[in-house]
Length: 233
Image (cartoon, rainbow, N blue to C red; front, side, top):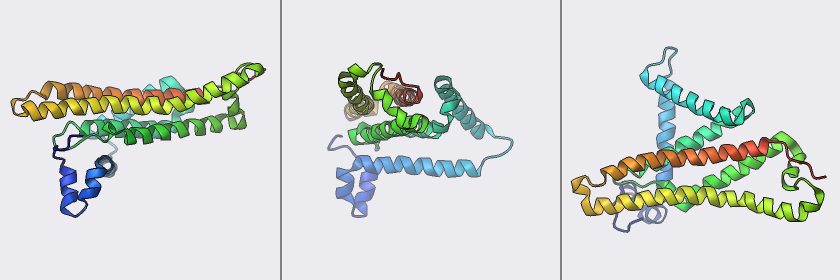
């Protein structure tokens, strides 16, 4: 992001001869780092699961339950099967957004390639859900309510579905990139005087809100794919 910004992971990889890769693909390195943290945390958490939960286990159980109930309020019980995808999406985006608040690290979601990959996965899964629920009849979603509108309705509907990829990826990228830029400038200009602290608090809020917006939009797209289409007459 900033050419002279010190990034811990990039410096570490440079020590083992992977400096060029780290320099050009820092967002991939930080994405892998977030994934590693989440995988290790999951393993540790699962091994520590008890019948009578301690405070940490209780916190995560309540968090997952609240997230699931929030999703089911929108989708109904029929949408329970894609909760693992939604939960993984939310947790990864939130963790990736938060990483940039730590000096020496950057948010992989501040790179358009990361957000675009998640938007494409969401796009593909949306249509998988549509086919799962409706089979070949899912095509009715793109035909419109009356047959004579098909030549106009179908191209517009297809374009609107592809526009979702742009909407999801650019919204998340733009907000997190902006947060990273402001924090980077403040750390360089006045880091010793705690000037970035208010922005870091706002960054925490933005990290949560943007993860929530991305997952809510994904849920709404999934619900749209689950609904019955108006057949062309």
